[in-house]
Length: 301
Ligand code: FES
Image 1 (tube, rainbow, N blue to C red):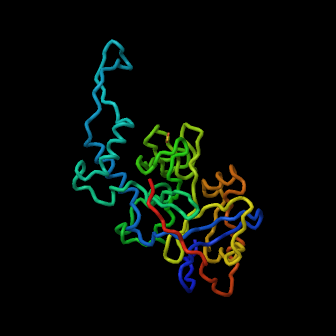
Image 2 (cartoon, rainbow, N blue to C red; image 1 turned 45 degrees about the vertical axis):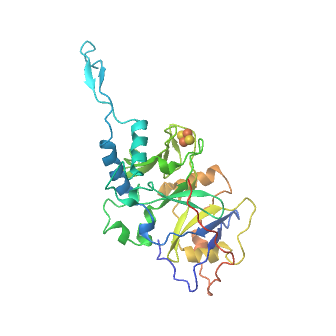
Image 3 (cartoon, rainbow, N blue to C red; image 1 turned 90 degrees about the vertical axis):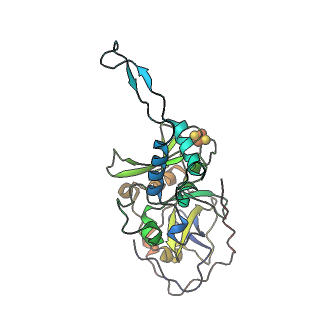
């Protein structure tokens, strides 16, 4: 990915992009996130969660038949179930229950935002296949540009019945199919899990909507599809003009396993790839900042 642009003038409140082939438009909204310490370190949250979980009341030992000899029942220690895991996530938010826990771990594993489009999203970082095994320095000292590859933005509400996913948990699990690791979110209400790279439900037919994210002008921009038939604003369209500001290389779905590609295929016109060829075209004059006032980003859930 090319270095973020240093376009003159104030950061625009949003940037539009269009797919040259279909004309479907996406709008990337500037968020209030400008520094790493405004996000939660996903891997650190998982470590804290596991620590809290291990200190929760242990599941009852059970007497079960031995697999090899049913006449020789043995005690087994069941693993932590959804109830214990939800209790641990809840305890992390309560300073009285978990004194000494870093404050950054108390607000859930993700940063919750409401976009001007109305989309409620969850920004998750430093988990999954693009997160380095070890950060080169402290998380809060990293720049957004450095963290950008591992930034995942997903819908904040569970597609099943709308639970706040930030009250559940994330896992960084081994990717048995592709090697490496992948991130999974577990819903606290009915325990459904979703792959954060594809949005696909694990063992269920639901799909968690995912959003594009870009770091531009020193801030995090999160994309939301414009309604079908909507056109990008002329000040920022066509895609080539905005693409210069984004200046990213979009790998094919096959190359990246990019899950948003599957989402685009499932919902034609809802999410279109940024055209690499178009975005490489350079506009010669700086674009004016957006004329709209960015609506306040509210904390949700
Ligand atoms: S609301 Fe999330 S699994 Fe039911």
